[in-house]
Length: 475
Image (tube, rainbow, N blue to C red; front, side, top):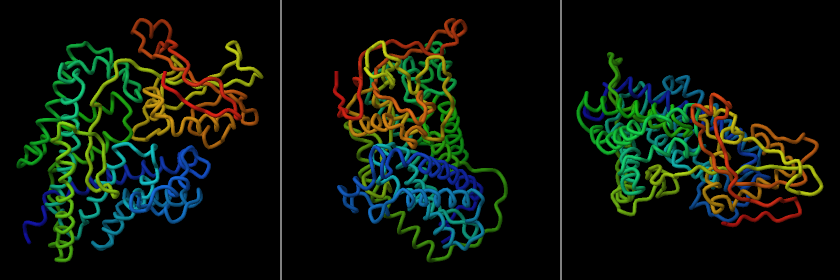
């Protein structure tokens, strides 16, 4: 079938595949480096306990069959190796079926991790990576041109990412409709970047223009993805520029980068593609059958997107094949941070020698300038932002974190920037306090060097020792 492939998108497929492989590599690397303290055998939310309670059909994963920290490390390491091979272009040197199998491997590997990752893997970009990664299996290699239906489905994913995010904003917080959300967002977002303070201090009229431009990019431009070239390329390019703006203004793991990767698949790159043979019949049958199944699965995400009760970031099947997305349906007006402190003193008095634990990405020391971590995902730091919103977000894991700090657990301390206690001398008590954080003014920044100013709000967790049960309560 001549219509089945679009050879004009040969370069688009090549760029998309290499960029997607890089995102896979970052995801597996983060899993390998962080899993022991989060979901390992002695982690805050251990995988063995989870799989004992959740059946395979609800969370299909190889770890339902066997789990050990050594096995997980090997699994994540295999993901890194396969991703690196895909970045290097190994799939181009394999027969068509071999390339498809090679692309299927990281999807299967990462699906097994996400489905036992629990709270730590509950972010929308996990499902997005799995959905996009599954479609990449059927894009083929140099032995056939890019299938039109797969290119269409990639645009359908990009449409849902952008249009869904635009709808949730218009239906959610009134500040999006009033064009005022960016008065607060750069200060209250989960993990600010090194330039977030500068974005926050931009003039308010510019903030309003940013919000208006965002609405256009998310509610109008996605429709243009399904128009002929060069309009579709222009729409994708505009989305890429918008995502790069978001990359500069914050740390959103690989969400922005994966959205850019998706947009690249819609760009018609200049240049003459090489001669590509026609697609074999078996390949056409497989691709069309899979596409038909995915179109059928799109019903519930599409219905959710158009519903007045739209929800964000939800999977409708355990394989994460077709999902719904969205972000920041509501925007916090104030920023709160949970600050964890420990003391080696015998009594946890207020005048004891309380020392603060420092995290890698989340705000802590007011004088410490935020760093750029995205696309790398600091999972504990992100969840600490949710914990500050409400103790309900931290009930399942915060107690485990405190216990491991009291033990000077090596794997947990590796997730932090710095522990105030030597490895052989853990604290006797740990407590948590809630502070309000605000950016300093330009003048204060120049005079004091402080990026933040913070104000004590209340006790979050009273002084706790290992014999004490850790329990959080709403104020």
